[in-house]
Image (cartoon, rainbow, N blue to C red; front, side, top):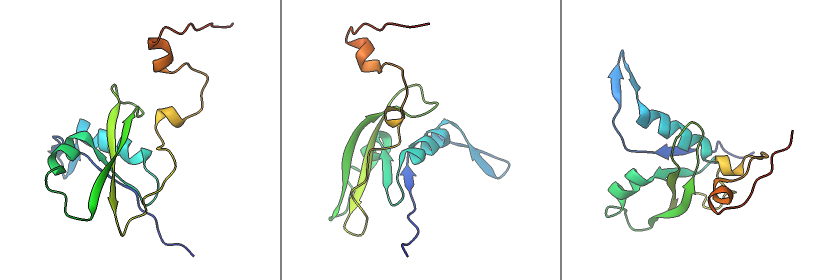
Length: 120
């Protein structure tokens, strides 16, 4: 029987401490990044990658996974995966809005001048 595969997300930003709990946009963004991860995967946001970049220990790296649109966030997020010898490193695509099946045209199709026909 396999072990428990925990997913993690690291993001850097301001949070408000109130009534013994934390609130704010940084926590919401972290939750959205976490929801894109697979079990056993550690995802890192761009602000956190910028802080870690020059301090990563030998044998650990950050693999750039590109820009991903995440639920309830106005702008796409640059995401990285923490890679280390003791961690799984191969996963399917992230669970971002790009991977959710729908019938809407992609933003890249619209920005490239592709025409869209709407049916009633």
